[in-house]
Image: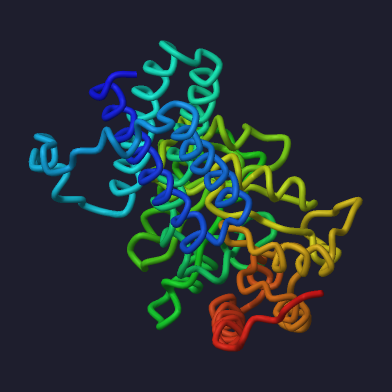
Length: 359
């Protein structure tokens, strides 16, 4: 291999490893995503190991940093990054572009290695996209601890009155998400209701989520959609809605929870925790499932749901889960805002305490 080609390989192996290292550290330190961190680390080591095969003794002889005319060439976009999502995109692009160079040169001498590099490059495209979505979604519901599901037929008071009482000016109004769950309304009525709820939530700093219907959520300008296991797949919904949109996924097993996170879910609903009068389930996942998810330390927040009340909330808190979704406990109360206040108060107090270590 001539010196100039060796210099190209040396520089691009460095670039690829540098980009992968940033992606790896984001998965490790920001998301606490052990599996993804390990996967990126393995790819980084695989790229680094190519030095021995492709460069052998040419590596050190080929380096000429002082004489490299490219070290001082910078563009405006390289110097400034508007946010962490842009940092991740830059790192991913740096890594994959470098891999393209490595792969093309490898074809001259080691065609089999070119295929290995291509596989890593494709994985890095997917990893970069996943991390960018995760970064964009961080903060979207991080402040939310309570989600209230609104169904008119289950409300003790008129549903608008319930919403207004929940969203009345208070120190905790920004800690609440309202999810519109109406299975029977015609589309036009559902859209009108979603728009009304979305406007009310925005005015108070709350988050508006629409159950099941991605089309209605997008048309109404809601913050997101919540999908069940039989609804539109999360990955498809993410492709349609883009990165700046919340997607919640209902899960009853650890496998479902992990798949939802891998598909780009903003948060996962876990449950049911207890038997519920509003939605009968043949299987109760229970607090053991909550403890399992808490111990897994997934990068997406977990929201416990199903039969949760002021009386049994302590059982959820003991599992290490700090976010809940409720329906009857709030909307069937004469004073829904007061119930929300008590629930939020307990959840915020729990968040200030050290997280249990489920065994």
